[in-house]
Image (cartoon, rainbow, N blue to C red; front, side, top):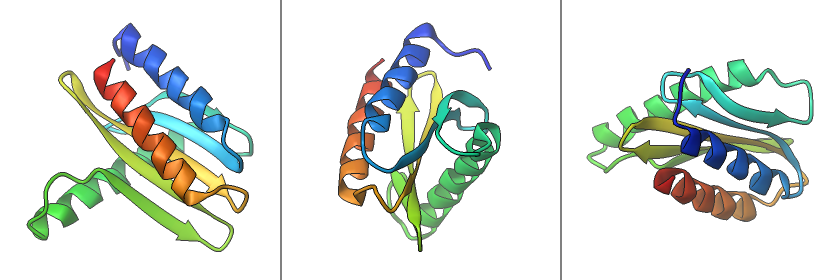
Length: 126
């Protein structure tokens, strides 16, 4: 997928910032249609598959929010016994993107949510 250089650079900056947190397993920035734009993984994670699934999760969140009469879905967190997945939507004038963070039990959810929100703002402004 062809994205603006500023978006690509912001995506890599987001990945670097989020990887600085404890317990991060993978960070994937994807297009809304599920293509991996930039990613970094520390385990056996298929970034292309994560990109596709994260965009689907984001789309489901959007539909559920609409059904509930709520505004745009901004983030979804999936908790597991050994970590969590945090998916954030990025709305730009040139398209929608998804920031996906996979973390193990070494991560602090509040730190990931806060840092992801900062990176979403940076991606939206790029």
